[in-house]
Length: 215
Image (cartoon, rainbow, N blue to C red; front, side):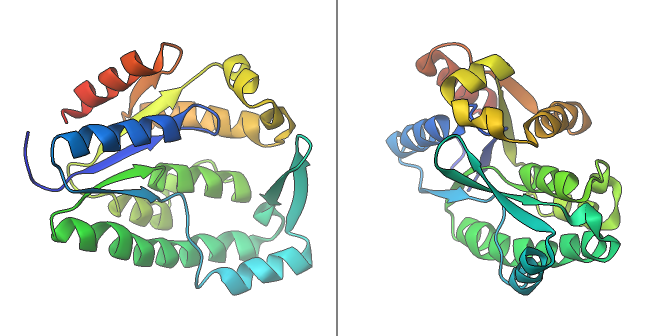
């Protein structure tokens, strides 16, 4: 196995079991004496915080509850052409900053990164918030995709909706779940992401992930 730093990402919609397999991949790498770190890279906010605060006041962001207690925010930026145009760019600069700090600098010093979500997940969030399902084709979307390190290794975990809801019943209350589910399926074909059906037992699934990622 190469000792060069690696970028490994497990992606997929909420409820498919990503965190379990990220932890198992980390355990596998550490057993191989690979220097590695866990990162959660769906999105980060810094420069975008003032705009998000404005959207809350202006009614472009609303809160709901999933299940009995889990809080959920819905961004309805599509209601404003200006917000839909500006927010993706500001979020890109935030993502660029945090990707540099959390990914590129550690990798430069030989640390492999194992992450739960990354650019694909962020683009899907943006697609839902702006109702622009082809945002990945726009200049800002293409810049997001350029943040992916060379030789990055991605796996998307997949499950039937019924299986996801049996694991996390509160997701039935997510008004954007079906839209997100469809977008994840579309991204598999668009970006040729390797897909693993997470219906088997954890050990077998993780072996499949490790084998495909050649780690």
